[in-house]
Length: 200
Image 1 (cartoon, one colour):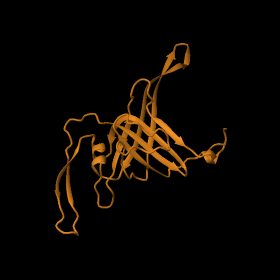
Image 2: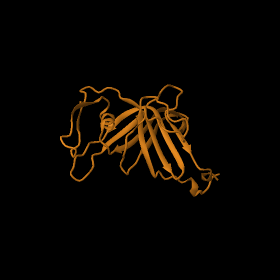
Image 3: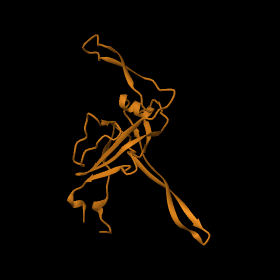
Image 4: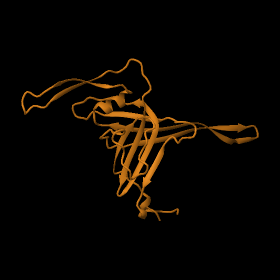
């Protein structure tokens, strides 16, 4: 029913970002758990949260007989997801840099019980870029309602500059662009589990 309904206002109070190999199955419904053996939670993001952008390119067909277009032709569709990661680890670094492997190096055992174990890791950025396609999952909750947005195939197409300062956290800002699986598969899916009181 159209009209004013405060129960239909959504606030993405808290959420998370997950990645997995291309076309990894998401939970069958909004109540199911993400498969932790396949989906990796990328951890904290900035308070800006997640920004979605769907942009369609529409070309008008102009005619001699009319000053208005006779019809429109859809020539392009871009679906992007933008966010900033706050944790720096093997998963987030490889995701931000465009793939590759973070290799474990030497491990230095503690000399005393009070000292921590020290592990070294190395990431080498390739001199020639290669496709790094992933599946992306976004989840947020609002009260007892759960919302999940899944892109079965896509890749990071833009990264923000990394600022290393004394007063701020390191931020890994990325733009993830959806890619088509095939001619009939959806570009993305949005699943919702809402309380019955959400509907009028």
